[in-house]
Length: 163
Image (cartoon, rainbow, N blue to C red; front, side):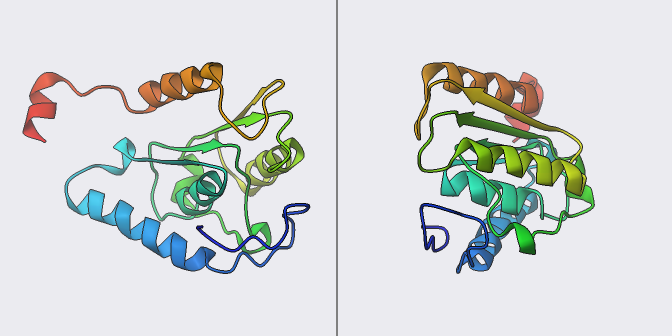
């Protein structure tokens, strides 16, 4: 796991032990890609459930603007400790979530969207799927692909050959 979850009933006020270590690990992966020549505007962090929670945590506290943050069935973990990085406010967020998710409740996704928009995230889109539970659907996967293609369009042949 990315961090300890102490209860499946309520994620608010959980200590999320281990989240700082996971943030550092993922941040180091982003830094390594940037050092290897990948510009931040071609990097998306994304994940499902805890991976989605970590994507919000890392992508919006990263000291730069990324191509995007992709969240599937996730939420803002450790919200009371969260501090939006000034440059990350311009990182777009796409949040996809099932309305019938018993594990990560839809209200947690809605609260995350409200909190992060209030914190200053410029672009936060929450798309809900009925009657999807804690899983993915083909409609959702197609929406994810479309969003990713918009955020990271294919490079022209000459530019991709250089990488």
